[in-house]
Image (cartoon, rainbow, N blue to C red; front, side, top):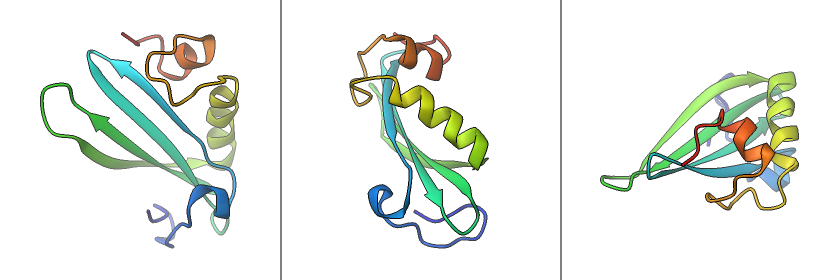
Length: 102
């Protein structure tokens, strides 16, 4: 993963700073978003894995997110005890995915 601002190669999340993942089921597909922080740019790059129920899995990058916007997303994710559970319907999952979960 590279920073979308400076193109620096980002280390795994635990080694490079705050980053978290969350998964959710939408229309039968699974979306997993992982936020990578660039300490040089103070910005987040988000990796989105879209595992389609009928079709191929795709991976894309989105962002950059400002440090403030990224931290706001991380605060939502951290309110869930099981962010990896695509079937979780807690308030944090619903807020993160805009109440569009299956």
